[in-house]
Image 1: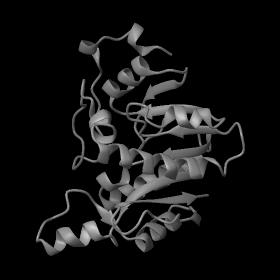
Image 2: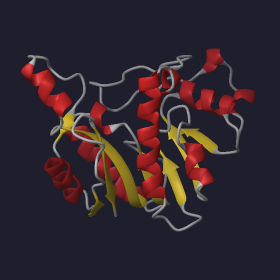
Image 3: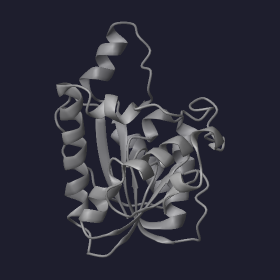
Length: 219
């Protein structure tokens, strides 16, 4: 589906996340993912760690799984999921990023605009959901809502979150700063997963207490 053939930059439809404390407007024409994950040696190392986390999970899946990658951003991981032998749908609420991912795609992947709080699909429509680098932006109430929605539409999921028991979190607190993202402990995340109907299959070893991003594999 080549969205760029039917929609130009001046016709991007508006969208907003359900959590008003995070995103309240669509970003357009912004090379965010390049800056964040490729724009410097440190950024490239961050991307390599993220990719290893995801590949470790993908190796546990049987071939041919139907996977929804949400939020998919500009498609950083969608093609990796496809290359691992799975059918993938990339869903992102920011239509500018949907359009950019279509323009930059090197393989045919269905890319759609949609809200992870209200996935427009039937119950258990997917074998797997990959939800990468979202939950640390959300309030506790919003995190729990997302976990319940992922449970509704899928059988397994891979999620990431910022772990409170890391040096970066405590450093900011010791310096009297308020972290600009939401950090949650592993025990709290497991509690919310349990309440949403998930079982934690694995909480993979992290890259040391210096790295915020941790993962949970759920079924």
